[in-house]
Image 1 (cartoon, rainbow, N blue to C red):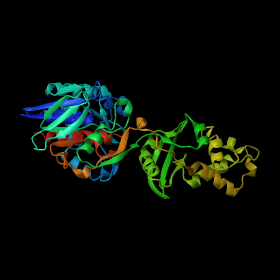
Image 2 (cartoon, helix red, strand yellow):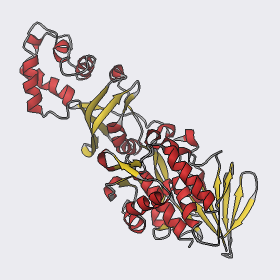
Image 3 (tube, rainbow, N blue to C red):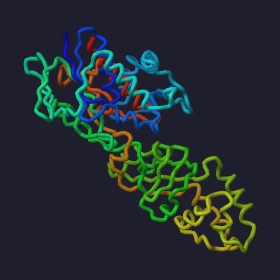
Image 4 (cartoon, rainbow, N blue to C red):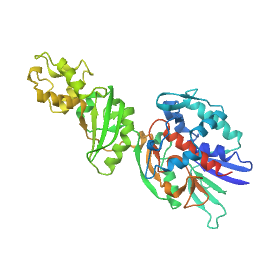
Length: 408
């Protein structure tokens, strides 16, 4: 008989509890500080739960040692995840870019089936139980968990699946980092990733509410480090939307490191410069027409005035006054608008937190701590964060499963 405690009822914790309970004789206890498990799962994928992605690759993951994911997915990968969910009655449907969703397109379906499996497999769930201390025995014969209510639970193994501090509205906190640090682990200071970006330039805020396909290129100290093309939502504080979320990690990391960071915005990503200049020539034929009015045929009517003014060009100037050299500046205003990012927005808006427990202190074959034997650490608590599109949930399922199977 073995007593196993899983601390945290998110994706990796639920998977760990399910698989740990498969071994006959294991008594699994799941501790969740919230009033229900899986609150973050319920909001992923806009409530549809983007479970995974067909295009798993180490390049989609970040951290001080992203190659760690190779060992993890070699032990429990995409097909293992698909097989597990199908075995509990959850088939998938695939959408663009390899994104996998439950066929029901409801995150609630995922949670109901996982909760049923916990009950079926005999897992005891303790809600409103925050673990304040994890105290390994000096003699190596067990671990004591002390809750906020001063309850003590003595177990043989602990799986730390507390999650990151991203997206506080569903209960995220720094509890897991503190527990890991108390066990001797190195914890890289977390910073928000996959979230909207603040752009202080007030002129840009006048585009609030406009959605437009753009290319965003991130320059750090003059070198391109990231690029994304897709929808950008202009907001009252900066930019959001899929393309903005895709580059947010690179931007925030550079800003927090005190580097010179610029975002090059191109609002015509499917048109090269020559094509744009040819189009411009067609538009600027009426010499008496104001410059901004001449351009509204190919963009939102608020855009010409905003981008021209940001480039230092008089948007009311008559077309006849715009010479060849200034037409090049007009092209730059729309194809290479340089934006200076502001400070990162708060964790409450972040889908994921970068940083966390140093994975070099974790055995990827079991997710067991090299610092505290008998303790396993999984999911977002680790210094691995993935791109948007199901990559973070896959890492959570995989690390949770590995920790759970290590109890067999």
